[in-house]
Amino acid sequence: MVIPMKFTPDEVLDSAIEIVADEGVGVSTSRIARGAGVSNGTLFNYFPTKQALLDAMYVRIKRGLVFAIGELDDDAELVDRARVIWQRWLRWATIAPTHWRVGRLLTGADLVTPSVVEQSLAGLAGPMAVVEQLESSATAAGLPAGFVGAVIQAQLDVAIELGLDADPAASATAFDVMWQGLTRVLVDRTLQPAGSI
Image: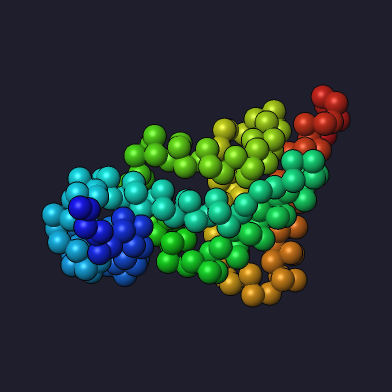
């Protein structure tokens, strides 16, 4: 006979995310276990190391984001796909601010195993396709790989921090500023004949 566990791994992860948001990534695993209402042994049954726990938290956060963004219309114009991603990303961060903050903390401090980051990005295929299309223009304009993704992420983070999701007009304007800043220079520049800029 199998006795059901009192808490699921996702419930433990959600509790861990809340604790890390309040106390930082230096918080002990025993504190996380206590806060989640499980024993240290149970926590380590789920996540054998603190790194495994941090990686699992990151995956949990990214799964929520992937779900929030949902399907994109591959036939839509690039700008329209980007706008949908922008709106849904802001909405997700408004609904799950702790997950957004801890996701930023984990990536900003480079605390997630690189292979886990790569696997999580695979779930964001729609947004990554938009970024990759713009990245090719950025590379052609002489910018380093990753520039476009970093600009978009920074602009999203500012919009989220300022609560622009609560103001649709401001959110739309912020998107236009970000989009025009990237495409007007990058796309137009790479389409110009040499020497005509």
